[in-house]
Each structure stands twice: as C-alpha cells, then as structure tokens.
Image (tube, rainbow, N blue to C red):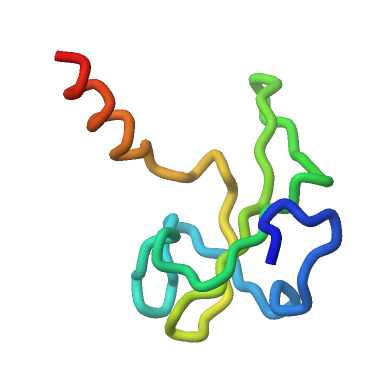
Length: 86
C-alpha cells in the first residue's frame, strides 16, 4: 500500500471524519494505524493560502477515519532532534 498512491484504496470509502487527530473509536494515534492514505490530489487552501489535505487512517480497531493534515499535532521528533543538537 502506497500512502501517496493517486487512486484512493477501497477501505477509505467508509472513513468518518475525526475532529481530534486520533481514532474516534479507540483514541489510538495515527502512528498506530495499519494503513494510511493521503489525498494529495485535492488540496484545500486555507484563508492564509496554505494547503491542507485529507489523511485517511485504517486503525487497528477496525475504524477508518480521516482528518485534515493541518489538524495534526506537532511531531515529537522535532523535540528529539533539538535535544540532540545541545
């Protein structure tokens, strides 16, 4: 499964919108998903002219959800990288 494939996989058809960036059923993070697909073909432009797109997640609990890329929380990887520079 290619997360950046141009054609959406079949499993995305049953996705529900998650208003918090986690599985609406079990609260698992996006990192715990068993499949991921990003709809990069149809970006939406925000009021400040930034792009956002839909990210689809197939959770381990069986729930399929999507959220806007702009709603993703900041990455912990940035904190780790900053601490390595000290």
